[in-house]
Image 1 (tube, rainbow, N blue to C red):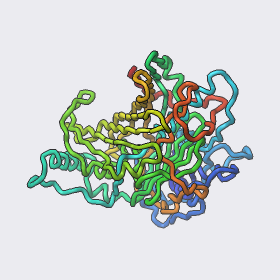
Image 2: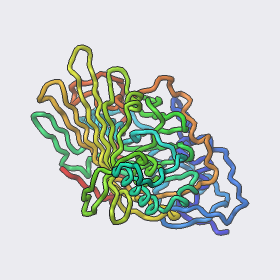
Image 3: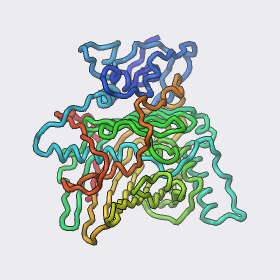
Image 4: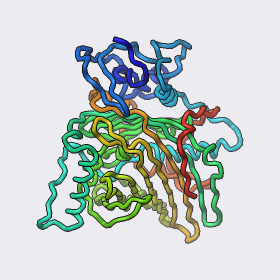
Length: 470
Protein backbone atom coordinates (compact mmCIF):
# COMPACT_ATOMS: atom_id res chain seq x y z
CA UNK A 1 0.00 0.00 0.00
CA UNK A 2 1.31 3.40 -0.90
CA UNK A 3 2.11 5.48 2.14
CA UNK A 4 -0.14 8.53 2.35
CA UNK A 5 1.21 12.02 2.89
CA UNK A 6 0.13 14.65 5.43
CA UNK A 7 -0.25 14.98 9.14
CA UNK A 8 -3.44 13.04 9.49
CA UNK A 9 -2.07 9.90 7.90
CA UNK A 10 0.10 9.67 11.00
CA UNK A 11 -2.79 10.08 13.42
CA UNK A 12 -2.54 6.44 14.39
CA UNK A 13 1.02 7.11 15.55
CA UNK A 14 -0.22 10.14 17.44
CA UNK A 15 -2.60 7.90 19.32
CA UNK A 16 0.18 5.39 19.95
CA UNK A 17 2.23 7.96 21.76
CA UNK A 18 2.96 11.00 19.66
CA UNK A 19 2.09 13.50 22.36
CA UNK A 20 3.94 16.45 23.84
CA UNK A 21 4.84 14.19 26.76
CA UNK A 22 7.36 12.31 24.65
CA UNK A 23 9.88 15.10 24.34
CA UNK A 24 9.04 16.38 27.82
CA UNK A 25 10.10 13.07 29.25
CA UNK A 26 13.75 13.99 28.81
CA UNK A 27 13.33 17.29 30.58
CA UNK A 28 13.85 17.04 34.36
CA UNK A 29 11.40 18.69 36.67
CA UNK A 30 8.39 18.37 34.37
CA UNK A 31 5.32 16.37 35.27
CA UNK A 32 4.38 13.23 33.39
CA UNK A 33 1.72 13.92 30.82
CA UNK A 34 -1.35 11.69 30.77
CA UNK A 35 -0.73 11.17 27.05
CA UNK A 36 2.56 9.42 27.79
CA UNK A 37 0.67 6.22 28.51
CA UNK A 38 0.20 5.82 24.77
CA UNK A 39 3.91 5.45 24.01
CA UNK A 40 3.95 1.71 23.80
CA UNK A 41 0.36 1.25 22.68
CA UNK A 42 0.02 -1.17 19.76
CA UNK A 43 -2.90 -0.51 17.41
CA UNK A 44 -4.19 -3.50 15.49
CA UNK A 45 -3.52 -3.41 11.76
CA UNK A 46 -6.01 -6.13 10.88
CA UNK A 47 -8.80 -3.75 9.93
CA UNK A 48 -7.13 -1.99 7.04
CA UNK A 49 -10.44 -0.83 5.60
CA UNK A 50 -11.45 1.27 8.59
CA UNK A 51 -11.66 5.00 8.14
CA UNK A 52 -11.03 7.98 10.36
CA UNK A 53 -12.92 11.16 9.56
CA UNK A 54 -10.97 14.38 9.53
CA UNK A 55 -11.87 17.91 8.65
CA UNK A 56 -12.09 17.75 4.90
CA UNK A 57 -11.22 14.15 3.98
CA UNK A 58 -11.16 10.48 4.87
CA UNK A 59 -7.92 8.55 5.26
CA UNK A 60 -7.35 4.81 5.67
CA UNK A 61 -5.81 3.68 8.93
CA UNK A 62 -4.20 0.48 10.05
CA UNK A 63 -0.85 0.84 8.33
CA UNK A 64 2.15 0.74 10.61
CA UNK A 65 4.26 3.89 10.36
CA UNK A 66 7.53 4.82 11.95
CA UNK A 67 6.80 7.11 14.92
CA UNK A 68 7.19 10.73 13.93
CA UNK A 69 9.33 13.21 15.78
CA UNK A 70 7.21 15.65 17.77
CA UNK A 71 9.80 18.41 17.91
CA UNK A 72 13.48 19.17 17.73
CA UNK A 73 15.55 16.16 18.73
CA UNK A 74 18.05 17.04 21.51
CA UNK A 75 20.68 15.01 19.67
CA UNK A 76 20.05 16.80 16.41
CA UNK A 77 18.70 13.68 14.74
CA UNK A 78 15.37 12.98 13.12
CA UNK A 79 13.17 10.01 13.86
CA UNK A 80 11.40 8.27 11.02
CA UNK A 81 10.04 10.55 8.34
CA UNK A 82 9.00 13.55 10.37
CA UNK A 83 9.57 15.80 7.35
CA UNK A 84 6.65 14.10 5.61
CA UNK A 85 4.14 16.43 7.22
CA UNK A 86 2.50 17.98 4.18
CA UNK A 87 1.35 21.29 5.63
CA UNK A 88 3.95 21.37 8.39
CA UNK A 89 1.24 22.51 10.83
CA UNK A 90 1.29 19.35 12.92
CA UNK A 91 5.03 19.62 13.52
CA UNK A 92 4.76 23.34 14.13
CA UNK A 93 2.12 22.82 16.83
CA UNK A 94 4.19 20.06 18.41
CA UNK A 95 7.17 22.40 18.34
CA UNK A 96 5.11 25.02 20.14
CA UNK A 97 3.99 22.50 22.76
CA UNK A 98 7.43 21.01 23.37
CA UNK A 99 9.52 24.15 23.52
CA UNK A 100 11.10 24.79 26.87
CA UNK A 101 10.28 28.29 28.13
CA UNK A 102 13.45 30.27 28.57
CA UNK A 103 14.52 32.31 31.55
CA UNK A 104 13.18 35.82 31.54
CA UNK A 105 15.55 38.32 29.99
CA UNK A 106 16.24 41.76 31.39
CA UNK A 107 15.09 43.92 28.51
CA UNK A 108 12.87 46.96 28.40
CA UNK A 109 9.23 45.96 28.18
CA UNK A 110 9.89 42.31 28.98
CA UNK A 111 8.17 42.48 32.37
CA UNK A 112 5.03 43.93 30.82
CA UNK A 113 5.03 41.25 28.13
CA UNK A 114 5.39 38.49 30.73
CA UNK A 115 2.58 40.00 32.77
CA UNK A 116 0.30 40.15 29.72
CA UNK A 117 1.21 36.58 28.75
CA UNK A 118 0.38 35.25 32.18
CA UNK A 119 -2.94 37.10 32.15
CA UNK A 120 -3.79 35.83 28.66
CA UNK A 121 -3.04 32.20 29.46
CA UNK A 122 -4.52 32.36 32.96
CA UNK A 123 -7.87 33.77 31.87
CA UNK A 124 -8.23 32.50 28.28
CA UNK A 125 -6.10 29.35 28.24
CA UNK A 126 -8.39 26.70 29.73
CA UNK A 127 -11.51 28.20 31.35
CA UNK A 128 -14.28 25.84 32.41
CA UNK A 129 -18.02 25.85 31.81
CA UNK A 130 -20.29 27.12 34.61
CA UNK A 131 -21.84 23.82 35.73
CA UNK A 132 -21.30 20.08 35.69
CA UNK A 133 -22.89 18.12 32.86
CA UNK A 134 -22.42 14.60 31.64
CA UNK A 135 -22.66 13.44 28.06
CA UNK A 136 -24.35 10.28 29.33
CA UNK A 137 -27.37 12.27 30.55
CA UNK A 138 -30.17 12.24 27.97
CA UNK A 139 -31.65 15.50 26.77
CA UNK A 140 -35.05 16.32 28.30
CA UNK A 141 -38.07 15.42 26.21
CA UNK A 142 -39.99 18.30 24.72
CA UNK A 143 -42.88 18.94 27.04
CA UNK A 144 -45.52 21.68 26.74
CA UNK A 145 -48.06 20.63 29.33
CA UNK A 146 -47.42 22.07 32.81
CA UNK A 147 -44.10 23.50 31.61
CA UNK A 148 -43.24 27.22 31.62
CA UNK A 149 -43.05 28.67 28.11
CA UNK A 150 -39.42 29.75 28.73
CA UNK A 151 -38.41 26.17 29.50
CA UNK A 152 -40.35 24.45 26.72
CA UNK A 153 -39.03 27.01 24.20
CA UNK A 154 -35.47 26.24 25.27
CA UNK A 155 -36.09 22.51 24.88
CA UNK A 156 -37.44 23.04 21.37
CA UNK A 157 -34.44 25.22 20.39
CA UNK A 158 -32.02 22.56 21.67
CA UNK A 159 -33.78 19.86 19.66
CA UNK A 160 -33.39 22.02 16.57
CA UNK A 161 -29.72 22.57 17.45
CA UNK A 162 -29.09 18.84 17.89
CA UNK A 163 -30.70 18.11 14.54
CA UNK A 164 -28.77 20.90 12.79
CA UNK A 165 -25.49 19.64 14.31
CA UNK A 166 -25.90 16.19 12.79
CA UNK A 167 -28.55 14.44 14.82
CA UNK A 168 -28.53 12.58 18.10
CA UNK A 169 -27.81 9.18 16.56
CA UNK A 170 -24.62 10.35 14.88
CA UNK A 171 -23.44 12.24 17.96
CA UNK A 172 -24.12 9.31 20.29
CA UNK A 173 -21.89 7.13 18.12
CA UNK A 174 -18.88 9.30 19.01
CA UNK A 175 -16.82 7.70 21.78
CA UNK A 176 -13.82 10.03 21.63
CA UNK A 177 -12.67 13.05 19.67
CA UNK A 178 -9.52 14.93 18.73
CA UNK A 179 -8.99 18.51 17.53
CA UNK A 180 -5.94 20.61 16.71
CA UNK A 181 -5.92 24.33 16.07
CA UNK A 182 -3.87 27.49 15.96
CA UNK A 183 -4.59 30.81 17.61
CA UNK A 184 -3.49 34.33 18.42
CA UNK A 185 -3.95 36.16 21.72
CA UNK A 186 -3.43 39.79 22.64
CA UNK A 187 -4.14 42.22 25.48
CA UNK A 188 -5.68 45.04 23.47
CA UNK A 189 -6.70 47.63 26.05
CA UNK A 190 -6.10 48.64 29.68
CA UNK A 191 -8.33 51.22 31.34
CA UNK A 192 -8.24 53.00 34.70
CA UNK A 193 -10.38 55.78 36.12
CA UNK A 194 -8.04 58.39 34.67
CA UNK A 195 -6.68 56.96 31.41
CA UNK A 196 -7.12 54.38 28.68
CA UNK A 197 -4.10 52.62 27.15
CA UNK A 198 -4.82 50.95 23.80
CA UNK A 199 -2.60 48.56 21.92
CA UNK A 200 -2.15 50.35 18.60
CA UNK A 201 -0.31 47.54 16.83
CA UNK A 202 -2.44 44.52 17.65
CA UNK A 203 -1.12 42.29 14.87
CA UNK A 204 2.50 42.68 15.95
CA UNK A 205 1.77 42.41 19.68
CA UNK A 206 -0.35 39.28 19.33
CA UNK A 207 1.08 36.07 20.74
CA UNK A 208 0.81 33.11 18.36
CA UNK A 209 0.40 29.51 19.39
CA UNK A 210 -1.52 26.29 19.01
CA UNK A 211 -3.50 23.75 20.98
CA UNK A 212 -4.42 20.06 20.93
CA UNK A 213 -7.62 18.76 22.52
CA UNK A 214 -8.58 15.14 23.27
CA UNK A 215 -11.97 14.03 24.61
CA UNK A 216 -13.39 10.68 25.64
CA UNK A 217 -16.62 9.43 27.19
CA UNK A 218 -17.59 9.76 29.90
CA UNK A 219 -16.56 13.34 30.77
CA UNK A 220 -12.81 12.99 30.13
CA UNK A 221 -10.73 15.58 28.31
CA UNK A 222 -7.16 16.78 27.98
CA UNK A 223 -5.83 19.98 26.38
CA UNK A 224 -2.38 21.44 25.80
CA UNK A 225 -2.04 25.04 24.72
CA UNK A 226 1.24 26.82 24.01
CA UNK A 227 1.49 30.56 23.38
CA UNK A 228 4.53 32.80 23.33
CA UNK A 229 6.87 30.13 24.68
CA UNK A 230 4.71 29.31 27.74
CA UNK A 231 2.41 26.35 28.03
CA UNK A 232 -0.79 25.52 29.89
CA UNK A 233 -2.14 22.00 29.99
CA UNK A 234 -5.25 20.80 31.76
CA UNK A 235 -7.36 17.69 31.94
CA UNK A 236 -10.16 15.76 33.55
CA UNK A 237 -10.36 12.03 34.25
CA UNK A 238 -14.10 12.19 34.89
CA UNK A 239 -13.65 12.68 38.63
CA UNK A 240 -11.08 15.45 38.95
CA UNK A 241 -10.21 18.56 36.95
CA UNK A 242 -6.58 19.62 37.07
CA UNK A 243 -4.38 22.21 35.43
CA UNK A 244 -0.67 22.96 35.11
CA UNK A 245 0.74 26.44 34.51
CA UNK A 246 4.34 27.70 34.65
CA UNK A 247 3.52 29.95 37.61
CA UNK A 248 1.32 27.66 39.76
CA UNK A 249 2.55 24.20 38.78
CA UNK A 250 0.09 21.30 38.81
CA UNK A 251 -3.06 21.77 40.86
CA UNK A 252 -6.65 20.55 40.94
CA UNK A 253 -9.59 22.86 40.38
CA UNK A 254 -12.15 23.56 43.07
CA UNK A 255 -15.76 22.64 42.61
CA UNK A 256 -17.49 19.93 40.60
CA UNK A 257 -16.15 18.38 37.40
CA UNK A 258 -16.99 20.71 34.52
CA UNK A 259 -16.42 20.63 30.77
CA UNK A 260 -13.74 22.68 29.06
CA UNK A 261 -15.25 25.88 27.68
CA UNK A 262 -13.11 25.62 24.54
CA UNK A 263 -14.92 22.38 23.65
CA UNK A 264 -18.23 24.26 23.73
CA UNK A 265 -16.94 26.68 21.10
CA UNK A 266 -18.32 24.65 18.22
CA UNK A 267 -16.29 21.46 18.81
CA UNK A 268 -18.66 19.34 20.92
CA UNK A 269 -22.37 19.84 20.07
CA UNK A 270 -23.52 17.00 22.32
CA UNK A 271 -21.92 18.48 25.45
CA UNK A 272 -23.16 21.92 24.41
CA UNK A 273 -26.74 20.67 24.20
CA UNK A 274 -26.37 18.98 27.60
CA UNK A 275 -24.95 22.20 29.05
CA UNK A 276 -28.10 24.15 28.09
CA UNK A 277 -30.53 21.36 29.05
CA UNK A 278 -31.73 23.30 32.12
CA UNK A 279 -31.68 26.71 30.45
CA UNK A 280 -34.55 29.06 29.68
CA UNK A 281 -35.29 31.12 26.59
CA UNK A 282 -35.17 34.82 27.44
CA UNK A 283 -35.76 36.39 24.03
CA UNK A 284 -34.20 37.14 20.66
CA UNK A 285 -31.30 39.22 19.39
CA UNK A 286 -29.60 39.96 16.09
CA UNK A 287 -25.95 38.83 16.03
CA UNK A 288 -23.91 39.94 13.00
CA UNK A 289 -26.98 40.07 10.81
CA UNK A 290 -28.53 36.79 12.03
CA UNK A 291 -31.62 36.62 14.22
CA UNK A 292 -30.96 34.38 17.21
CA UNK A 293 -32.80 32.85 20.12
CA UNK A 294 -31.12 33.48 23.49
CA UNK A 295 -30.82 30.69 26.05
CA UNK A 296 -29.71 31.52 29.60
CA UNK A 297 -28.10 29.16 32.08
CA UNK A 298 -27.07 30.17 35.62
CA UNK A 299 -24.88 28.21 38.03
CA UNK A 300 -26.73 27.15 41.15
CA UNK A 301 -25.69 28.42 44.61
CA UNK A 302 -24.29 25.03 45.63
CA UNK A 303 -21.91 24.97 42.66
CA UNK A 304 -20.84 28.59 43.31
CA UNK A 305 -20.11 27.79 46.95
CA UNK A 306 -18.03 24.75 46.01
CA UNK A 307 -15.95 26.88 43.64
CA UNK A 308 -15.35 29.64 46.24
CA UNK A 309 -12.38 29.65 48.56
CA UNK A 310 -11.46 31.69 51.65
CA UNK A 311 -12.02 35.42 51.13
CA UNK A 312 -12.86 34.88 47.44
CA UNK A 313 -16.55 34.24 46.86
CA UNK A 314 -18.00 33.59 43.41
CA UNK A 315 -21.33 35.40 43.45
CA UNK A 316 -22.71 34.38 40.08
CA UNK A 317 -21.78 32.67 36.80
CA UNK A 318 -24.20 33.00 33.89
CA UNK A 319 -23.91 31.53 30.38
CA UNK A 320 -25.85 32.81 27.36
CA UNK A 321 -26.11 30.89 24.12
CA UNK A 322 -27.24 32.54 20.88
CA UNK A 323 -28.73 30.01 18.43
CA UNK A 324 -29.35 31.06 14.85
CA UNK A 325 -33.01 31.01 13.81
CA UNK A 326 -31.89 30.30 10.25
CA UNK A 327 -29.47 27.40 10.74
CA UNK A 328 -30.22 26.28 14.31
CA UNK A 329 -26.50 26.36 15.14
CA UNK A 330 -24.79 28.11 18.05
CA UNK A 331 -23.09 31.21 16.64
CA UNK A 332 -22.38 33.26 19.77
CA UNK A 333 -21.70 32.42 23.40
CA UNK A 334 -21.28 34.77 26.34
CA UNK A 335 -20.52 33.93 29.92
CA UNK A 336 -19.94 36.25 32.84
CA UNK A 337 -18.94 35.51 36.39
CA UNK A 338 -18.60 37.89 39.32
CA UNK A 339 -16.18 37.31 42.19
CA UNK A 340 -16.04 39.16 45.50
CA UNK A 341 -12.75 39.29 47.40
CA UNK A 342 -12.89 40.51 50.98
CA UNK A 343 -9.58 41.75 52.35
CA UNK A 344 -8.77 41.79 56.04
CA UNK A 345 -10.34 44.89 57.52
CA UNK A 346 -10.73 46.58 54.14
CA UNK A 347 -13.38 47.12 51.52
CA UNK A 348 -14.40 44.31 49.25
CA UNK A 349 -13.03 44.18 45.70
CA UNK A 350 -15.14 42.80 42.85
CA UNK A 351 -13.89 41.16 39.67
CA UNK A 352 -16.22 40.59 36.74
CA UNK A 353 -14.94 38.41 33.90
CA UNK A 354 -16.91 38.38 30.67
CA UNK A 355 -16.05 36.18 27.66
CA UNK A 356 -17.81 36.73 24.34
CA UNK A 357 -17.13 34.06 21.70
CA UNK A 358 -18.23 34.23 18.06
CA UNK A 359 -18.29 30.91 16.17
CA UNK A 360 -17.85 30.81 12.39
CA UNK A 361 -17.16 28.54 9.43
CA UNK A 362 -19.32 25.55 10.30
CA UNK A 363 -18.39 22.51 8.21
CA UNK A 364 -19.41 18.85 8.53
CA UNK A 365 -16.95 16.26 9.79
CA UNK A 366 -18.39 12.76 9.45
CA UNK A 367 -21.87 14.25 9.59
CA UNK A 368 -21.26 16.48 12.62
CA UNK A 369 -21.18 20.25 12.18
CA UNK A 370 -17.97 21.72 13.60
CA UNK A 371 -17.09 25.44 13.85
CA UNK A 372 -13.68 25.77 12.19
CA UNK A 373 -12.91 29.33 13.28
CA UNK A 374 -13.92 31.93 15.79
CA UNK A 375 -12.82 34.72 18.07
CA UNK A 376 -13.29 35.66 21.72
CA UNK A 377 -13.27 39.03 23.43
CA UNK A 378 -12.56 38.95 27.18
CA UNK A 379 -13.18 41.85 29.55
CA UNK A 380 -11.72 41.74 33.06
CA UNK A 381 -13.35 44.48 35.15
CA UNK A 382 -12.25 45.33 38.69
CA UNK A 383 -14.24 47.68 40.90
CA UNK A 384 -15.00 48.38 44.55
CA UNK A 385 -12.97 50.11 47.25
CA UNK A 386 -13.16 53.75 46.21
CA UNK A 387 -15.70 54.96 43.68
CA UNK A 388 -13.09 55.97 41.10
CA UNK A 389 -10.68 53.07 41.43
CA UNK A 390 -11.91 50.73 38.70
CA UNK A 391 -9.70 49.04 36.12
CA UNK A 392 -10.68 47.21 32.95
CA UNK A 393 -8.52 44.96 30.80
CA UNK A 394 -9.60 43.82 27.35
CA UNK A 395 -8.10 40.70 25.76
CA UNK A 396 -8.82 39.01 22.44
CA UNK A 397 -8.26 35.65 20.82
CA UNK A 398 -8.75 34.42 17.26
CA UNK A 399 -8.52 30.73 16.40
CA UNK A 400 -8.89 28.27 13.56
CA UNK A 401 -9.40 24.51 13.70
CA UNK A 402 -7.08 22.54 11.41
CA UNK A 403 -7.73 18.87 12.27
CA UNK A 404 -10.75 17.07 13.69
CA UNK A 405 -11.21 13.33 14.21
CA UNK A 406 -13.78 11.10 15.91
CA UNK A 407 -13.44 7.61 17.38
CA UNK A 408 -9.64 7.60 17.29
CA UNK A 409 -8.47 3.98 17.81
CA UNK A 410 -6.24 3.26 20.78
CA UNK A 411 -7.34 6.15 22.97
CA UNK A 412 -7.97 4.89 26.52
CA UNK A 413 -8.57 6.11 30.06
CA UNK A 414 -4.83 5.95 30.71
CA UNK A 415 -4.44 9.01 28.51
CA UNK A 416 -6.31 11.18 31.03
CA UNK A 417 -4.47 10.28 34.25
CA UNK A 418 -3.59 13.41 36.28
CA UNK A 419 0.12 14.27 36.65
CA UNK A 420 2.04 12.51 39.41
CA UNK A 421 3.09 15.77 41.11
CA UNK A 422 -0.49 17.01 41.49
CA UNK A 423 -0.86 18.69 44.87
CA UNK A 424 -3.48 17.54 47.33
CA UNK A 425 -4.91 21.02 47.78
CA UNK A 426 -7.22 22.48 45.15
CA UNK A 427 -6.95 26.06 43.94
CA UNK A 428 -9.80 28.41 43.11
CA UNK A 429 -9.97 30.06 39.69
CA UNK A 430 -9.58 33.43 41.43
CA UNK A 431 -5.85 32.73 41.64
CA UNK A 432 -5.63 33.74 37.97
CA UNK A 433 -6.83 37.28 38.64
CA UNK A 434 -4.05 39.86 38.18
CA UNK A 435 -1.80 40.26 41.20
CA UNK A 436 -0.64 43.67 40.09
CA UNK A 437 -1.73 46.49 37.86
CA UNK A 438 1.27 47.95 36.07
CA UNK A 439 3.39 47.43 39.15
CA UNK A 440 0.81 48.37 41.78
CA UNK A 441 -0.14 45.49 44.11
CA UNK A 442 -3.88 44.92 44.40
CA UNK A 443 -4.52 41.30 45.33
CA UNK A 444 -2.41 39.04 47.48
CA UNK A 445 -1.96 35.59 46.07
CA UNK A 446 0.47 33.12 44.65
CA UNK A 447 3.85 34.58 43.65
CA UNK A 448 5.65 33.03 40.77
CA UNK A 449 7.54 33.96 37.66
CA UNK A 450 6.18 33.60 34.18
CA UNK A 451 8.51 32.06 31.66
CA UNK A 452 9.16 34.26 28.63
CA UNK A 453 10.70 33.56 25.28
CA UNK A 454 14.00 35.16 24.33
CA UNK A 455 13.12 35.28 20.67
CA UNK A 456 9.75 35.61 19.04
CA UNK A 457 8.77 32.41 17.28
CA UNK A 458 8.21 32.85 13.53
CA UNK A 459 4.49 33.06 12.96
CA UNK A 460 2.96 30.63 10.51
CA UNK A 461 -0.58 31.89 10.93
CA UNK A 462 -0.33 35.33 9.39
CA UNK A 463 -3.31 34.50 7.20
CA UNK A 464 -5.54 34.57 10.27
CA UNK A 465 -7.97 37.46 10.02
CA UNK A 466 -7.61 39.53 13.16
CA UNK A 467 -10.63 41.59 14.20
CA UNK A 468 -10.26 44.26 16.87
CA UNK A 469 -13.11 46.26 18.32
CA UNK A 470 -11.68 49.19 20.23
